[in-house]
Each structure stands twice: as C-alpha cells, then as structure tokens.
Image (cartoon, rainbow, N blue to C red; front, side):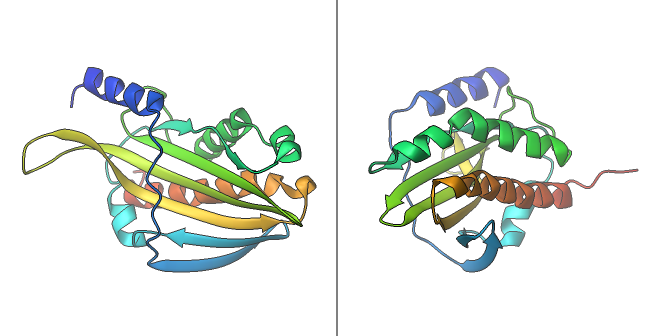
Length: 187
C-alpha cells in the first residue's frame, strides 16, 4: 500500500465515530500485582502468533484514544489525561529502543476505560497493533489487528489511579519484548 493510502486510512481510523468492537475471546489469562491494584491480563492471540506478526514491520505510530469514563468519575478525570497516556506509551517505546514515527503505517492504539465503583475504580487498559494487509480473496488493502493485549484492574481510590498508566507501560513493555524478539538487532 502506498504511503498516501496508508496516511488516508490512518486519518479515517482516527476520525471515525464508530465504536470499536469489543471482544470477549480469551485464550490465556495471567495475574500480576501492580501498585496495589487488582490486575488481570487478557491475551486474545497466542504469544507466538502475536510475536511473529511483528517481524520486519519497522517504525510504528502511536495513537491513544480518548479515555472512556463511565459514571461519575470526576476525580479520575482530573487525575488521568489522554496526553499523559500518549506520552507514557511513546516514551516507554523509545526507552525500549522501538522506533516511533508518527507517519508510520503500523499504528499502536491504546484504549483506556474507567468505571467508578462504590469503593474505588475499575479500569481496562489495552493496546493493539494495526497493520495494513492485502486480502487474498479480492486484493483489497485493509487495516488488520495483528497484536493485542488488555489489562483489567481495580484501584482502591483516585490516588492510585496512576495504576492505569503503569498498566499501559506494562503492556508497552510486553509489546516491546515481542517486537525486539521478532526483530533482533544485528551487532
């Protein structure tokens, strides 16, 4: 796909008003302890398949979607901003030596949702890599998700809402490890 077409498709994806499809497919669950948050990590593809899809892709773009706050989350809104999430993901990629190019065709999307509970907040944080691919059946070029991971967690109060950013950083580290395994540097 040409660079012009890739940029046009990226703009279409960014300006789309459609709600992303939410999937409930789980092949592998992990648990972790992170800043006193209750965390579950959901993989929807096997690690090997996800890692293999990253071979040879080069630099990636990063797009953090607007945070979805459900319910009265005023305190969380004041502590959690999309720009802070964008900076955290991009910085973590650069620290991990992953090339970031805001005009690249592969796009790493990050999504966060926060729900206020009677005691604290529940959240989901996920990242997905979308790449362009040509369909064999009709030679149509489209964007496909080739890598994805989501964390579901709970924090006791708004002072621990930074656990959402740390969760995105953890996901970014996992993505980075897969990227570097699929694209080893020659010394």
